[in-house]
Length: 346
Image (cartoon, rainbow, N blue to C red; front, side, top):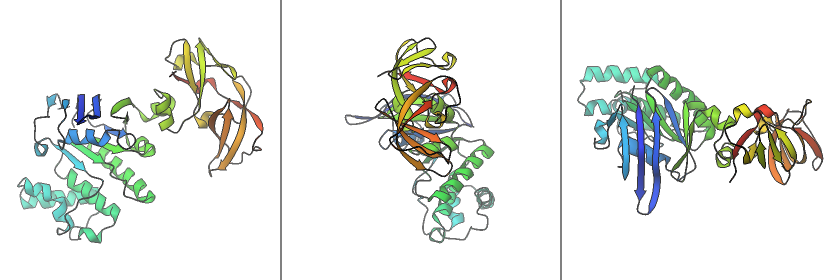
């Protein structure tokens, strides 16, 4: 298992700063997701870790040792790409064992480890098949086995599930997470899918425009986003401007009580936010009531999603599956003080 540290890691392409002074630490045996929209710098970061790109400045450190000057093939970091890149003229066993043959591992040991890896990715007996005889999910498993068979220090995955359909993506998520935990390997993957990051990662590094916005546990991104933009990326656009005064936030709708023990901003101008699933469409007594106009409703199977107008701001709320209100009507909603989070006012 390997600890990875990125220190002031920067990559420029001409005048464009793709990754800007990135600092974070990945614990040994941890799985971390680099998350963000296209062009945010996440894949560029992965390529600097593996050595396919050199940083313009900064450092990549494995277990306390800088590896920036070490060639890609000697770093012990192996990358699984979005495209499987299997050799079409080789069978499965030859594809999986390619790295071992390049390292001149003897045939008996190579065969043993290839067989072991195919068991791990749940494809025993596939040794003689060709890539064109495999499904997309099976090809991705072979690419994963080929990466793992050389026993890398760090496993890097660049949007490994992007080309799979929904059912296969779920199956591969479970497989990748299970293998990572079983082997205890340090793993880093890139994705633009919040759900994928939350399901797979121990911690998530969210990037916008080459800059790290927040590095935290998946739960923290939902419960304690660092900014309105972070909250918005995690599908929470519910914000209201206000002024904090101790345990109360004065808003255009009136005063709302907060749990001061779970907020980290001083008195003054703030943005108040509550996740859609925490907005109560059926108040159960107590305070923090405000009026909202029902704009529209969508039945989602497990719940009804309600679009609200709160003081000119669009809010979402999740009600019971059988919830219904008249579009255009004004209803009371409740914001539990234990679920309110405050964001910096911009």
